[in-house]
Amino acid sequence: MKNKKTITLSLLAGLLAVNSAIYANETFSYTGVNILNADDDIVGSAIGAKLYSDYFTTFESSFMLGVEGHLTYLGQPEANGVEYTQFAIGASLLAGYDFDWIKPYGSIGYSYWGAEASTSFSDVRDTGGTLSYGVGAFIPLGDSFALSADYIHFNEIAGSGIDVFSVGIALSF
Image (cartoon, rainbow, N blue to C red; front, side, top):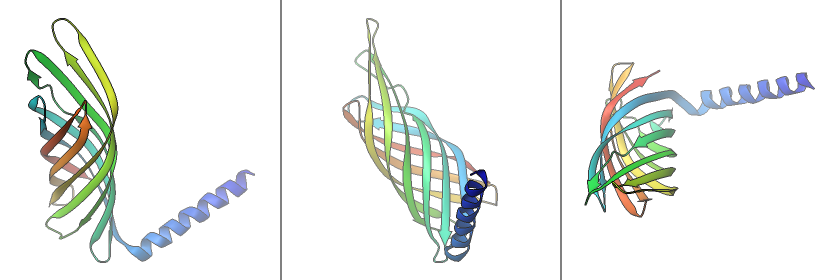
């Protein structure tokens, strides 16, 4: 039985390699950290951070398809004596175009979120899921680094929409 599994996995890996050689011109990934400004419809804006990892396949036509996993800390905005803490963890599908000097893309995804509202008297926690969409770009700085900028809109986190603008640096490997 073990040999059949090994042969099956080898055949699948071989087919994927051949498929990539035929259709894909290049694959690349970026892992990075962006500093962000999250603008909440209810409580205003806050500074946070986004840790992400992207994987792209670029086709002969320079069209890019990719996936992203992210952990986004949306900061701690404060309003009317209430401090809010919000985060999101999710995945997105990415599509874009490789112009060599810039790699713009659009994204659509789904995120699990958590939020906490704290006062001097009590804490209230909430969790849920939300759709997200956005646009972004990488500007390569040689073979190993790139500048990164993006905009993401989370449809609903704790009852309000959140717009996130971020910039940072990414490592390519």
